[in-house]
Length: 156
Image 1: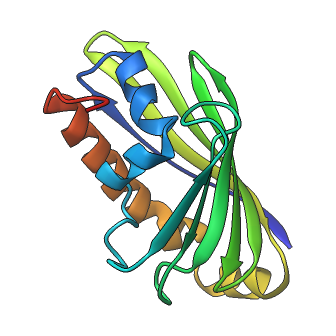
Image 2: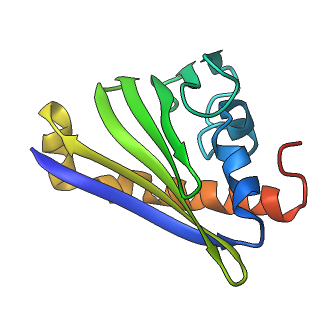
């Protein structure tokens, strides 16, 4: 077993509130999430408030998309905290956070995932670290988020 952390960041020429608007509403993730296009037939269910603390999202997709759920557990001006649970292809729970920091040229956005490799994951992590499994996806998602925000259509 081993704890892990994967983190990627970018700077976006946008206001922190506009960044958070695309993160706290799971329906908006379809615009920028790197996993939204891996299965065109993926099913999605939303529960709780439309956005912010308590909002939740469940998905079921093909082998690449897997299945799982996310729930926003806290929103502050500088962080959105999310509980992530995978049910397929393997069970796992992780903590996601989007850290939002105003900087001179916009907003610094950090996408971070923390968790613990257990069971089969702990064996796989010896050969393929979690950073290698999802790091490029985080980079792709942040690039899409940046593109959406800098196109001037946040929350649209």
